[in-house]
Each structure stands twice: as C-alpha cells, then as structure tokens.
Length: 433
Image (tube, rainbow, N blue to C red; front, side):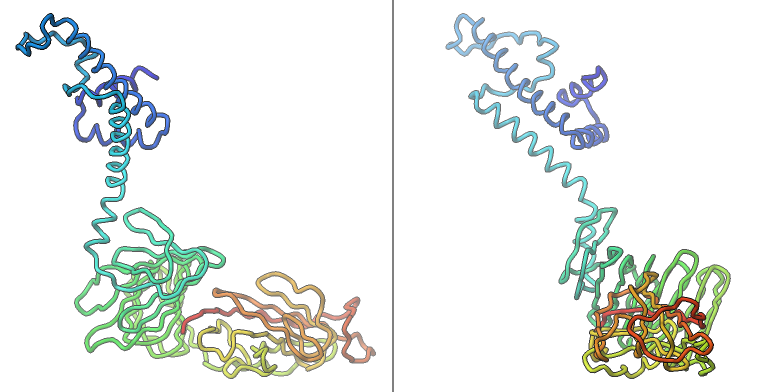
C-alpha cells in the first residue's frame, strides 16, 4: 500500500478526519473492492490487537482479582488507534468487522441516493407511464434507472426512450396523453406561471401529444430548446432536432413562440412550423394530399403518390389515399395496424418500379400492378405493423423502350429501360389511443 494511502487509513481508524474528509475517504473505499477488503482486515486487526494488549495488561497485574485501580499505562503508538472497549469473544471480532463493512456500505448507499430519495418523497406525481415498449429510463438528480409501465412521474424526472424500439405513453389526470417516440427525452417542469397546468420540456426526439381541454384561463405549456407551445386542447407533433424544432398540427390550434427572438405565431389544423434560433418558418399544408397531374408516358413514367392500404381488406384507408408529405399515422386510431403502401404511377401500368424503405432497397423489382412496398400474392397484399418514429418510402419507375409492348411481368428486365420521375415520401408513425 502506498505510504499516503496507509496514512489515510490510519487517520480514519483514529478518528482524526473531518466530516468532508471522511466522506471523500469512504467514497474512495466504496469504489475500490480492494480497499473495502483492506478496511475490513484493518478493523479486524484492530480488534485482535486490543485483545492481545488487554491480555498482557491483565497478566502484569499481580492481583487481578482484587479489582483495584492502577495508574493508566502509557499507550503505544498502535494502541492510540484503538478504541477502549471491553474484551470480546474471538467470534465477536468477525461479527464486528462484518457489521462495520455493512454499515459503511449502507451509509454510502444512502449518501449517494439521498438527494433523489428526498426529491421523490417531496415532489407529488404529475403523470404516470401508461404504456411502454423496449427500454425506457427515468433520470432524477443525475441518477438513471430502468422504468416500466405503471410508474408515476414527478416534476424534475426526465423520461428517456431507447433509440430503435423504445416507446412510452404518458398519461396525466386530466386525460392528456403524450407519446415519446424512440430516442426521445422529456420531463415535467415546475409551472412557470399560475396560468400553466402542466409544463413539459422536450430536449430531443419526437413527442406526439393529445391535450385535453384545459380549464378556463389556463393552458398546458410544451417547450423545446427553440419553441414554447401554449396548448388549450389539441393534437400535435413536436419533433426536436439539433438547431431547430418542428411543430405539426393535427387538430385545434396552438400559439407558438420563438424562445430566442420572441416571435409568435398561431397554428391551425394542417399547419406546420419550423422554429430555429432566427425565426419561425410556417408552411401551411392541406389535410388531403393531391396527386401530381398524370403527365407520365410509357417511355417516361411518373410516380404521382403513395396510398396506405388496409392489408386485411386490400382497400385504401380513408384520409391516406393519397398520403400527404409528413403524414402522421396513428396506430391507435387506424382501422387496422396491418398496413401496406402502394406506389401510384402515371400511366397506371409501367415496366417496373424500384422501391426503398428507410433507405433500404426492396429485394427485386415490382413488375405487376399494384406496386406494393412489401409485395402481394395474386392481388392479396402483404402487410406489416410499422414501428413508431419517422420513416421514408421511395419509388422510382422504369418505362418501356420505344416500340416495346406494355405488359405486366413478374420478372421485369430494366436493361436499357428509361428511368422515369421518382418520388420520396416522409411520414411519422405514432401509437396513441
């Protein structure tokens, strides 16, 4: 053991450390299994040494049974480190050592988590985790731990979802619900005004909110690093990215404010706004998408849109025929979660369509109408349940060479086939009842 470390152990055993020094010393011991074992041995040795000294002192007394008072012996340097306790049985030394190590562990554990424990005790719950999938965590006072459905959330607790498959649905007492998509972090904050019912801070990721009607004169406040959203009761999606936040309205209206410039704007159903550190960029979008005009030809086909198909019925899903850019698919309200996506072309029959999903090309080409992202068998489409989060689908059509006859084929060859005009669609999947 280094000389400095040895001195620290001696000072602790002798009780010469101040309270801050003792806290630092125990913190270091807790982090090192070797130091914990060393401290246990020293405590045991201390007890053993005292027993030896006690026996020797008793042996020097000619009349030990007389119990007379004798002058105190001058303590040795080793004895100075030892407390004056009565002689114990040999097995008691082991019990003392084990108890000391246990008490040290408990003290360190309480010290480490004291702030979090007192915080959780004092802060009342404001919401609960209604549903969870994949890995999710709560973070409080720097302590991160796994969370699960049914747990309460308190002011100051941050809820995090894992990237990939993490998802959490949070419910408030008034019926407000918020869904955290994968790789999202959000926390309830203390209300900044008496007019605020709930204040929710989203630091990253995508949050889909369905806010219940708020009491007269009050509103819910949803914040990101770039925008404040005052909500009276509506449905919207907030996507937070480095440098900017995007607000997409589904129902109702909200008032937003640029946190850097103070610029405000009123958003209605169908509006979308991107807020950065400079300004609020608003782009109104229609509720129903319009297909591109059918200007394609057999030699130069055009992808004019995408349609969301109910794979249970093979029919288009109302409201998604066609799908709008940045469309929001709520699995909790769709007639089915078994869906498919069809690429629509002009003309209706083309030589082949190459499809991609989230940047991954589909194996093989679609050479027979309908041109389905996950294929079909004799017109019966293959469906899937999309995962929450943002997705992209891309379609590129191939036309016929001059003089080539237009016909469906399961194994199209695109050698020397002219490439038409493709289309990429971006959409968000959520799962909120």
